[in-house]
Length: 140
Image (cartoon, rainbow, N blue to C red; front, side, top):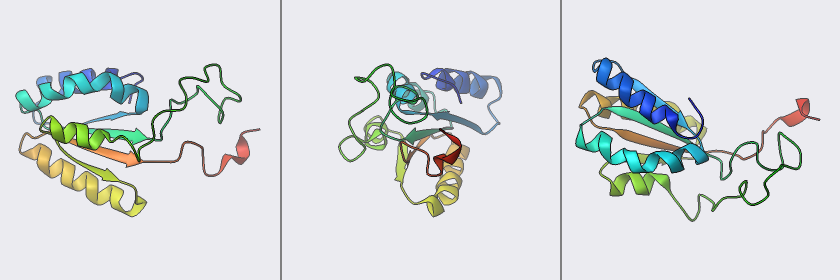
C-alpha cells in the first residue's frame, strides 16, 4: 500500500523478481488514477497481480472528514462510483475484475483473484467504501 500509485510499480517489480509469489497492490482513488495507464502492462506480460482499489469517492485528507475542513476543496470530491467504475476500465484493458460493495464478499472475491493470479492473469477488485469513518468518535 503506497500513495499516488507507486504501489503498482513496486508490485510489478516484486512479481518480476519473485514470479511464484502472490502479489497484491492496494491503492485508493488517487493512486488508481495514476496506475490505470500501466494496467495494460500486467496483461501484456501476463503478471498475476491483484490490484485492490479502495474506492471511497474521494482523495484522502483533502476535504472534510479526518483532517477538518481540508485544504483543497476541488480535489477531495470525485465523480462517484455510481458514475465511474475502475472495474469496467480494467475489463476494457483485458483484466478480470469485480466490484464489491458487500463486506461479506471481500474474502470470496480475494480468493477468486488469487485463483486467477495462479494462472498468470491480473485481477482488479474495486471495494466500494464509505468516505468517512463509520465510528469516528476518536476524531474531534
